[in-house]
Length: 354
Image 1 (spheres, one colour):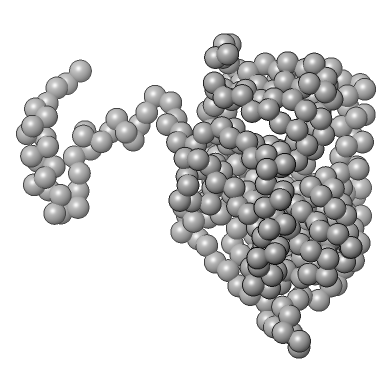
Image 2 (tube, helix red, strand yellow):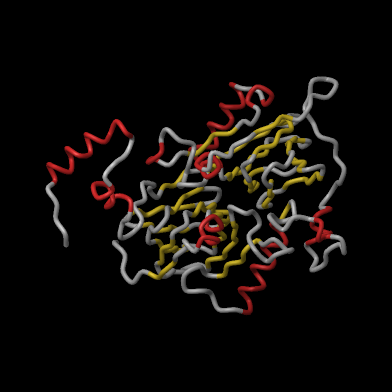
């Protein structure tokens, strides 16, 4: 291996610094590493700990003041950033009966996973859907969207967005919908009910669907009742995967690919007593426990979860799941960002720290 005079190299670096250049050999080790150097850490956000603070947020700020009343989760490694992984953001949003979160759009893709309450709705590009616990709702890039609550109780959901990735790409834009008479920014509802599901979620599609962009799924709401029933049927016929148990991916029916260009999503069933094998991958994953109890070991951190807890497994962190009872986990990841460039990698891990 070639050697060089470090003192002379540092002197050279200081001499050329005013020209805004740096000797590559002094920084190459930090740019090309043997494995990913990941600052994020495994972490769990407890539903029982956070839920009362959502009520407090409702007492302190009105929906129209907040634009979106959300408590954003922050990875301990990124306390100055609204990020749970390198490219993903997550938070809990609450909307009270009668409230309306006004219409806007942005360059970030978003997902919603309903955690508490039934009867709130979202309208995305003119289609309205009423949301129930466990439903998975997509809000693609640059889509007009607003939320409302016609029920008699608060509704809470998990927001997941690719804000950190869009900011990294210097591509963030936002636009507000024009204000209607009465001072409310609301888009008109052009399609009610589960219109997009009946158009595209039945193994059928309109004959002119080539006009629909394949960049993201045309389905607005993936119902939990439907996905849960499919997962249950899979568990009756197939053996569980040694890593993931029984797992289904939410897909874009036009392409078979991920629901959004930057995020994919999954629903998995872990039977009571399941002890998953360890693995790791270059994408970061955000999990939500929808049913049951268990724990996920991520590196040397053990995350014990119960319903509505949210936890993150960062990139290249060895991890495995264990289920104390029959359990259902929802997850979303940033793997679609890596795959088109051949950057995605996944492997099993033979041993983990206890």
